[in-house]
Amino acid sequence: MNLALGVLVELGIIIAFAYWGYRAGQGVRARVAIALMAPAIAFGFWGLVDFRQAGKLAEVLRLTRSSSSQAWPPLRYMPRGQRLRRIAPTGRGDRFQVESPPTHSQVRERSAMTPPIAARLRLSAAALALAGLLFILYPALRPFSDESSLLGATAFASQEWAVAHVLAIFAFTLIPVGLLGIHGLLRDDSQEPLAYRSIVLSLAGIGLALPFYGAETYGLQAIGEEALRQQSADVLRLAAAVRSGVGLALFLVGLLLLAVATLLTSIVVWKSGRLARWSGVPLAIGMLLYLPQFFWSQPFRVAHGLLVAIGCLWLAVGLWRRASR
Image (cartoon, rainbow, N blue to C red; front, side, top):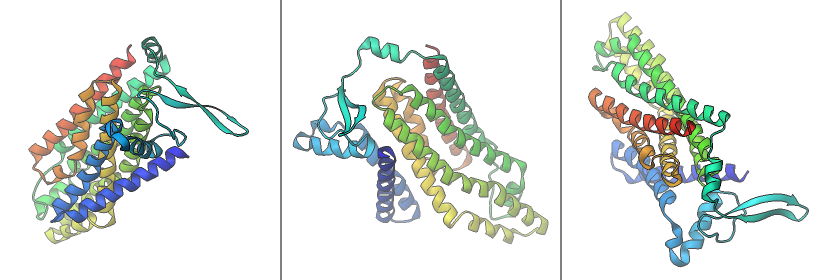
């Protein structure tokens, strides 16, 4: 219940920052860019800053963060590395005790990979590696042309158009599978709640974004085929209707949630130390740039896909190595 409440609070914060960013910008591109960057920057600051150095405000800031990201009971200051652990319910309410940081030997014992955990990590690593490959193939195979002419109709109606977008759909779908491996790796780590929220946000984001890709895949293909049948570029005006309205709004919100999810993942990876610290950064940057790259030419979009692939593969290698220990 507390975790669900925390996720809802964070979703509200994301929407609030996105709305502020959209209102603050001038021009459609600037508004969309600020709407995407504002919540990402805010969550990055919120996750990385150590509020214990804030003096008298440290406790207030810490409680604000913990009330929305961890269990509700920790209502007093805990030394670095300590946390409260629920013991058992009693007639007078739940009891909690202070849990000190584990020793080095305990960490090694906990982090030893049992066969089921190792298999899950390898599955997540394989999912990330495959997703990275698909993120490169998507812009490389997608045909680019003047979409207001019959050349655009030919591109829409081609098999390459459908295959490329289906590959993108699979790539996005595999991202949460990879994030599940990072969460499993941190099952005994203080960063586990943040890793869990990144999975929740990624699932919500992908669920909102993929309907737009479905419209791009099959809707525009049907429009292209009809334009070629009539030999009329006027039919292509319907493409603007497919790419606007509620579908576009959901797509933008989905990309925003996915960008925040990968940003949280990069914070988790950095702070936990279980994987290479920088391994989560390329994927986060790639997802933050996912909307702007739609306005770029094909070579730059392929380069962007390569950046996302590097992020996916770097995390995949780290998970595979951890599974082999």
